[in-house]
Length: 568
Image 1: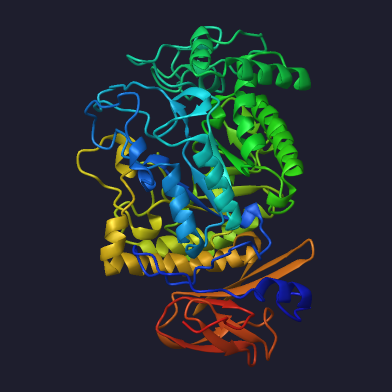
Image 2: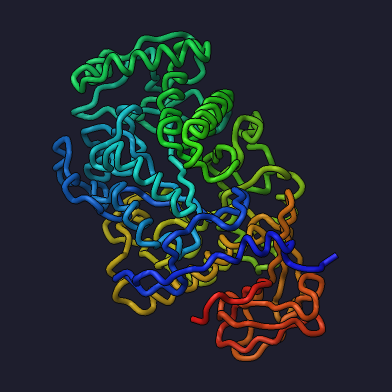
């Protein structure tokens, strides 16, 4: 039964909203329309989401007045100091419609909690905690990133645009010891041995690297709060409040006052107070897995509590989302990660999705081989769960297309492969990943290339391609979460079909097509006489004899059963 793309009611709901042109921002004229109100009209599913991942300090400086705090003024190694990006900068780009134009429906940014005040020098030059993974106080935001009010405004602004917010959270370790930051008490952390990554034990019960104290997450032994933290809270005038909240938390949960439960309370406060939609969990495999189930339990409680208190702010009934960074996990492993002497199913311990480190290798294969592999695995070994695919990241020194020679193919692979997509900031603008003088991960973390985007037509062309694919993906859950089927080999045409909980969505995509006139098979997807729209060229078409004939200068076609709202 292939009568139509959507049921009549859903079709009307999904596409009847009128859009208005928004004033073009100075950065670049967008290739797609920006809407003043972008409340979601497409059913949202995390399995098909389009996530944008950025380093808070490296994306956009919305408030130059917060650029220097705690006298973080030492000269640093290349790209190893704070550069001014902040929460306000992210919010500005949400308001401008940058993410909406790109088809982004979830934003993940690096941690914004208070970082160690000093710097380290491990042979790479002085390094400050610009990346956000060196926590000093989980209960406060770092002033370099912004204030609690800034974060609240970001979440509310994103939700107004139909965009989810994912916080990056760290439970595994504190920040390093510096000239300004002492080690946490021995009841809280261990400082040796350093992980060897050859067994379960020497991956979980160890410090990730030298001078990165590891939280004792395996113990249930109650501990007192560190004197330094108590003194800090007292000086800031919030000691009584923090202690009272902790008492309420432990009374409610019955948990022992072990280190991990303090941190779980502090992390889930951001859900309870602000309504964030998900966590990206750092260094998952370095923590005993039961801790993640405990984190999810409290995260779910906090999310449901927030929704009851703020019913008018609730986007929909989507549950809280947790994705994990199990470094080197690949989709081919199915549900388990193999430590060598032990296998762990992290999906069975609180995670909806794991970051997939495998696509960067698969990306070298032909499209059909990639798409078929992911379709089969997500609908067999991983049925009911998901993976977050990426091709570039903040700590993967061997990304796909490091020299940015294939930005259009990168978009095709990332945004059209089944699963959740993770766009790393600057993927869509071919931001340089090779910076002279950098060491280690720093080369992946240059500031967002806004000036290049404003002035370089080639960069603008790359962005337009990402915008077209991204908005198509965000408009159709079938692209990331639907079943894949090849319709023709030459030209290469495939369909995606999503049918779940009363929602029916079908699309047809063509890649590596000839320029000019081309005939695309849509048999079994769209009936004869169906009005079809190519979202890439914005061309109306009609199905005849199981095919559509498209005349466009592009090698990509994105077919949906709708009339275009306006001609571009």
